[in-house]
Image (tube, rainbow, N blue to C red; front, side, top):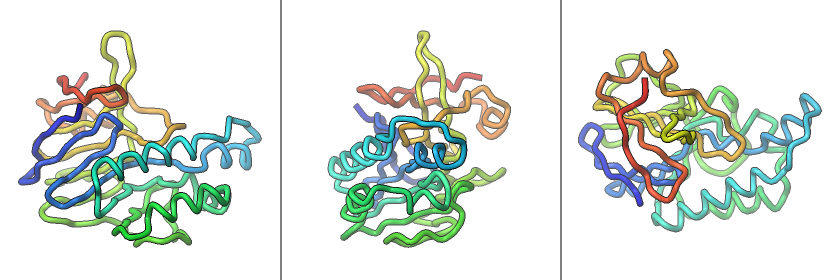
Length: 216
């Protein structure tokens, strides 16, 4: 189901869900949850979407935490759709998230949607350096051993659109984990300019994570 690969000296696992697992460190990493997006859209634009995306995202996240037995969870930014989205969560959803955090080293990395401090358990960081890898929200030119998110990469295969990891020898970009999230095509210049010519797209969202040459 999952796909194992190496980045720098780390052996990592791309999960079909779009989560990343680092067994040696007990780390589960997800990006761009965008919790509270439907509430934010209703608040700002009056656009009404079914308000179930937070629960669906939390259910998938909890399933990954339990399946991997992760001791540390790193959320790579844009975990909340804006700085006010945490306050807009229903009480049951907030308690659900709090229970998941309890007993784990839970790290919230600042994103461009949720750059400010959040009133929720866990530590809040700009980026994290761990055993030769750096975790941050947006990829930086020339970085080595970098794990990031932000772009919500997607690719098309056999007429179907897939969320995907983008991986080369220097960096890894995670897909968006949140339910109400769009995506940026892997052939967009913003992504093709970051990734090396031999980069892979690891397709997520199905029963199996599978790698193909990154569509350009």
